[in-house]
Length: 351
Image (tube, rainbow, N blue to C red; front, side, top):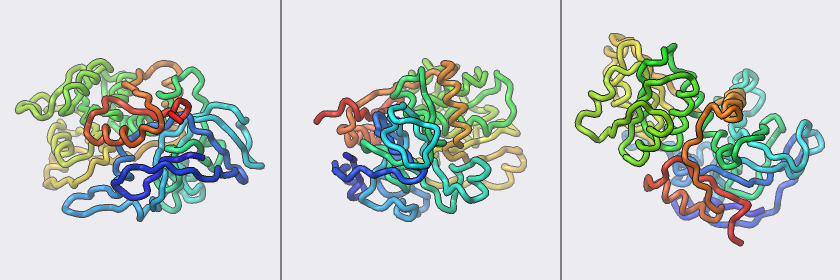
């Protein structure tokens, strides 16, 4: 099989030819046809997450040790089955749920593989991922049918959409006209706006520093947009019932928390990095909530997929590129040149 690997963090991915694995037990070998490029891939590529105050969390501590194949938005075709793999057949197109836990701890048994801490097997995070022609999936239950959904858009559901969907599920009870600030209108924020619209919310404020991304937010259903570099940005957002931070930087966190009305909720799922410093008494006095949200569960992905099949959620802009353009895609994402999502196409890559 052919993969694009991190050989040294921060250096260009290297093409590598390796023996294609043979599925054992309940494993399924997927031939990858699409793989989304996520901002988290940048952190894995660079080798760390910024914790603020000069502190870092190094991905090698999570099992991501070079040479390593990133990619956690896999979509492909079933190529081979282990002897105990049931429920799928060779040749079927499937979306892969990548947030696979140990399957044994209480969290996993409760259906929250994405919160597993005792032995997670996240594809592209601590197990070989989808910047590759083939990926091993531990069990057929992590494979979902996407009939009727565009292949490239389907790939983005496994991280981008399910992350946004899970974040919106953590909002307090709201009415359609309650203000919701969407902080960051990249791939996550744009699909987040689409999901909020599907959930019946109408007063969505798209916030970003890039006017092209704000224009895309408007097309997807934001009632208004705010360039957060503007002097009056806070006044434009002030008093929202909720803020979802799809960036996760000190600047977006400070803005999101400060903009909340009393009893409002700030949900953070972006991993840009840094730390939040906030006085404690106002948290109680304003009765605001600060909630973290990390990707989503298998059940939530099934719910997202059902919405996509019914065309209840509108796709954010998706650009499909050949798989051998993976390095350029990462560089463009890092430089902020991507509006929406880039998806790698393993079917049309150059020889």
